[in-house]
Image 1 (cartoon, rainbow, N blue to C red):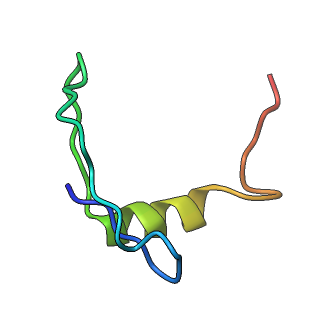
Image 2: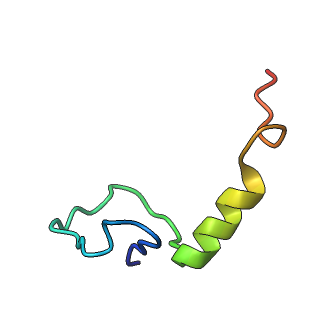
Image 3: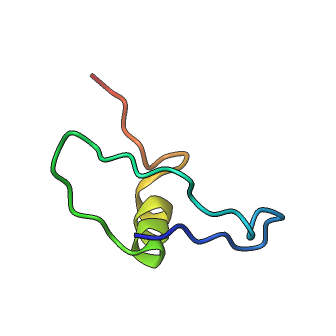
Length: 50
């Protein structure tokens, strides 16, 4: 998937590599990645209790 740069001076950047990760994964859209990050991170959301 493509990166999305919003409200940043780096909107002109593009990837210059074709690295392939050595494992399988399901990529999500940038919009879904943002929504998942907002929903699952932050103070009181992440439980680090062993």
